[in-house]
Length: 399
Image (cartoon, rainbow, N blue to C red; front, side, top):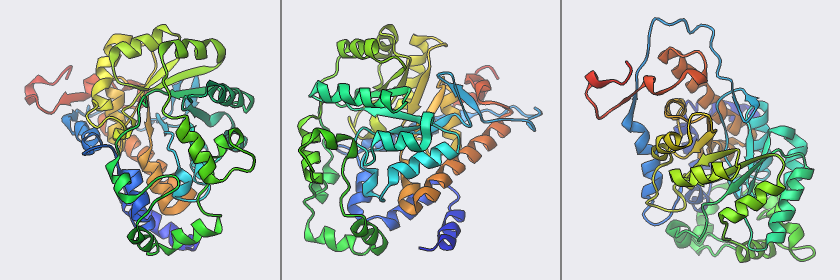
């Protein structure tokens, strides 16, 4: 599609919901289902969104908000807004070179980008593109030598933020993917291939880029000149892997930079992370894709903040689709927010320009919400701007 047509489509996309619709039209159903789906009955995905609606924002008017900024700092680094791009695996299936597109869009916007441990671009290639804006996600491997070498490579590439995902002790039951035959290699029904052909632009990109992309960070641990299936089998044989507090201590002792643990939902686990010298945690239920009945990240946030105190950095992801969601998370005690599906919708719909549009939408919405609330910077947001929507208006806290 010509750049002019792409720009017109993106200009008409006024919300993340609009980008979602564009992504749904652009992708074969099996891939859109992969992005959208979760385990079992997929209650967790719905719940992640619904819980944001339990909170109402309380604006404070007659404040001078003409000079406001969305910029904030996390882990001693300044960013243009209080959110970044979460790790999202297999993005190269949605669009060739999607990992690099997402990374460049985040970097251009002044935001951090977390490269998935099962990306289709090497951490070295992404680091060369965006430098210190790159954070790297480590999926622990059963073969500890592989994990250790990935950590070594991250350090050699200049990565200073290592994000260890710990919420995959066993595989989840993603029935939508199973019914579609989504896997590596895929086992699609004939109807799946026929449906994919109704998305000719995606098919053309897929075929001209060489078909299914390699999981590039794992290729050097497979056989010589491995196929996509060879690398996929290697990943499958090494996942999921047990990761315990002794492993956290070992990693803390060996990694000299910022160490973040992603997947924390229980206050005691957050306290343990704090005691083990972890620099920050990302409160996350894996976007509702792991344990279907897990507590929503936004519900876990105030419980964890109460236990770890005000000074320990807390980040969060899961269910964020609006700038107001980012504001609510900050009011409840988050220092920073990550988004996954919103930027995936963007890159699937229109490549790097689509990812940039998703970021622009969220940042513009958040800035507008700040102005409406009477806040001039993210750090001002706290519980005084919140009211539990189930309470009577007369019980507004700190109002």
